[in-house]
Length: 315
Image (cartoon, rainbow, N blue to C red):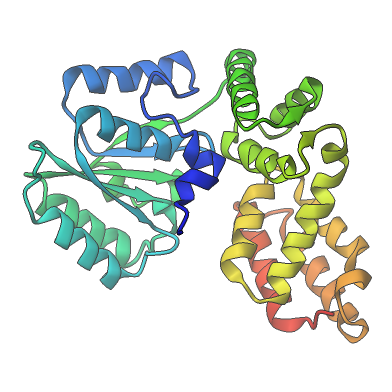
């Protein structure tokens, strides 16, 4: 029997279904409460770091307003022809529920700013009578100004004075999940993991689910996380799996980039053929130098790993 992803992955199984269930700063949650109260949905652009809840909020708003929605991932389905076909097919029909239909465009900052984003602007105008758009992005400077001007921009910023309350709420949520899943745990370990990755709640849940397979989450996971993560990266590069490699970079970009370069360098003999070591060292040195002045560290790390995939032989 086929198992639905939502039945297995904790991030889906326990995804909040309403705005009240989300873990957000009070001021931000009030913004979404106002939208629900007014029952009037503008085009929205959600911007903020990975895992903070942008997609969850977009889905919750649609659910609570009873609106049909189409979810498109910009990094996976960002081809202009695919986007045009899906949006036009969805947006050109009237909702059976009444009211607007909604296109949730996840990771919109990965859409081509020269071709796909201008086309998206045209779709927003073309279907303005019966369709609204909610776009999410990690980097708002990658979204062209004409899209900014057609949306209400909401920044998912977590301020220092909000962190304690948010972490406490998420701690309660995590303990509920672990108890429901009948997984043993040490509370100080859970607290340390939350503090390490906040406010990337998605990553915390993914890490916890991965380590729950042993039956108990204890201090051993804090020692092993970086080693396992590096192995995942090297495997992705060996298999030339760009999507998996890019996801690893996104999940680990909060780590100091210089430490990531050093981690690869220190472990290269374990993963790389001896004749490729000089090439790997040159690539790492080049991108570590560039890291000192590039504006986008994630893009620089993805470019580095892409060059390693293309030019290095793995064991």
